[in-house]
Amino acid sequence: MSFGYLIIVSTSDNADYLELAYGLALSIKHTQKPGYDQVALVIDDIESVKELNSSWVFDHVIEWDKESFWDGRSWMDTLTPFDNTVCLDADMLFLRDYSHWIDYFIDNAELYVTNKSYNYRGEIVKSDEYRRAFTKNNLPNLYSFYTFFKRDSELAKEFFTLGRYIIKNPTEFSNVFLSEYRPKVVGTDEAFALSSRLLDIQDEISYELEFPRVVHMKPALQNWPWPATAWSDHIGFYLNRKGQLKLGNYQQYDIVHYVEKDKINKEMINILEELVWKK
Amino acid sequence: MEEIENLEDLFKNIVWAEPAYTAVYDPKSGSLHCIGPKSVLENEKYTIDVDRETAEMIIEGKIKISSCFVDVIDNTFQIAEVKTAVKIDDVLHRVIEKQYADDEKIDLYIKYNVENQSLTIELSEEYTGTYIQHEKFQPVKKKNITWSGDTEMRFLLTDYNDPNCIHDTISLKISDLLEKSKKFTNLSLPSKFSVYTRRIFKNYLIDIK
Image 1 (spheres, chains in turn cyan, blue):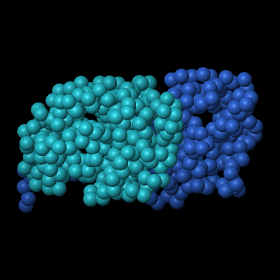
Image 2 (cartoon, chains in turn yellow, brown):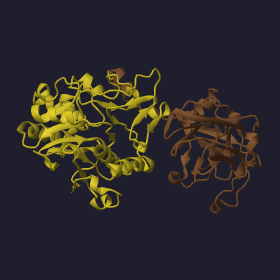
Image 3 (cartoon, one colour):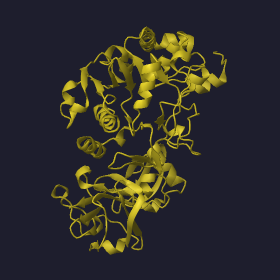
Image 4 (cartoon, chains in turn yellow, green):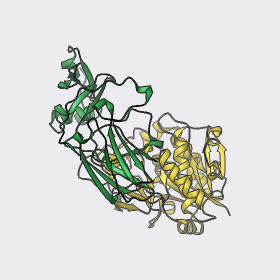
């Protein structure tokens, strides 16, 4: 039974998503033990991968251009080359060994979607600043940035198929099921939450667990007593040469979803490359 | 006549226009005369657009208008000294290493000599310092700015990309860099280190050799 992480990106004018995926893959290779460090990349421009210094950090590179931007993630079940997969957002970093989470999911779950996140001080995020559509419409609080699934699971297949259908028909689903607060965009998170509610499987796919722990760096989630438009206006991003990350003066141990795409630049990539080369 | 059924819904759908700000400046010195809504100052000859956040901070007095100037050569708006800095990068700015720097003009140049563990600081020739800009930026026109020579610059020499672990601090005054450089010797630093400082200039650079 194979296991691996799946990252789905597409070319964008707003950010270099391949560079973000590369940074994440390097951090996975650096921190995860063998058997838990496989990475597959789905990308619309396969040629650009060859230009990376260490493109081998992607164990599988799959060319796919059927969807763009985040919509592609809803196709994760059809794109993965692994029997067991965790699909991740590209703008994340791994900072320690999380393989024990994977052992649990492989033994106990067909599909698991994360239902909470943390701020950089380790506090559980309670704000619904970016999730009014969830609270007003009583949707389960699902985050697609860390989604585990088994490829042969019928439950997962049904869940993702409906999720794709929701993304393709946002107006119809918003009008009927999100009438209390219509989101500007029905993204993967909204589609997953709605899919789980319509199939009535939320307790099966997103029950209470102490993991996965993901630090979500959207600025309004940081419990600051002031409004913030960018978290990096207020605290620094300090990745040292051992691949250890401090946000402000808080050492990070959980997966960090840094959100601001400029945090991974040539210098940070260089740090991560050197760590992986030395391993 | 159309009846308004739900005033709350009506207000929800109103899209408020983003206010646009502009500054009026002296074309010779680059100093700012005033700042305000663009619609009010549109008849002025020498104006430059300023982003909303900065404009409102100047209007509220959080940034002194006397600390702002327009680079009349590049036609860019700059803040010379932020006395009330609000962004972490303004109070704790990491000096970028040469190999990772963008190809821009440098305002303050730091050279670290690994062999004799000395650090030399130079101000750009634009500000009457000794650092000569790259030939592609020549000829360099001197900026007509009056500096307070007492302005102190403090540099934290820290662990690589971690200002929480400080190895040494050095400080100097701007007057120390006018037409001369300043050298610090006998520094005991790790092979990889970073330099942090309060941001007075726009572009800092460190060259480690």
